Image: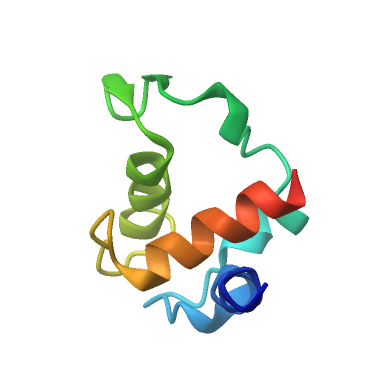
Length: 86
């Protein structure tokens, strides 16, 4: 649960976006993230992606901050929180 707790903090603003946007502004309590649907085609990216790639799209675009590697502990925590919420 410590990883989920860390993901919750990141999701609610600790990720430090350059424009003060947080994941929870578009996805309160990880709603509308659909981890069960991945991999799937994402039109924003233009190909079939894993969920971590879509999370990175959000990190790089709406949050305007540096993307995370798939094995980054912060990415793992974000995905754990998302899956825990759904």
